[in-house]
Length: 116
Image 1: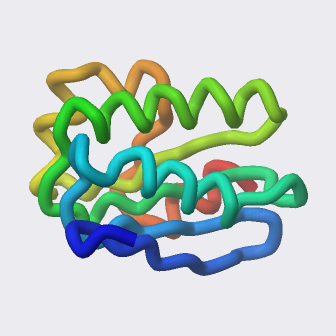
Image 2: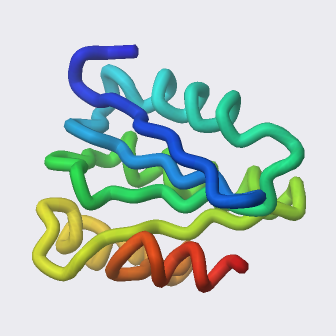
Image 3: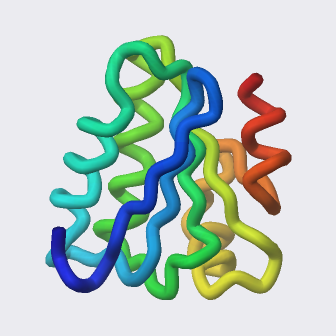
């Protein structure tokens, strides 16, 4: 995985919680997406993508969120995103309208409860 971002995984029942620590941009978005797809598998019901530790997300990262939501929906799985108020990427998600396609929660507990 690129030195810009790390994917930290945790399972809570059928839900994969993956935290993106670092920066997601055009240089590593495809690699991050592939890592998430491999980690999710067919047995998972949802992916909670925790962007709390994400310091930067460019258009490739935003595109990644929309593609993941579409792909998971086609597989009868859900994508939810965690972005606390004031997080570095919160404004980017607001401006780009990600919340219209993907539920956004302020913390992991709320996100996991939302897909349970």
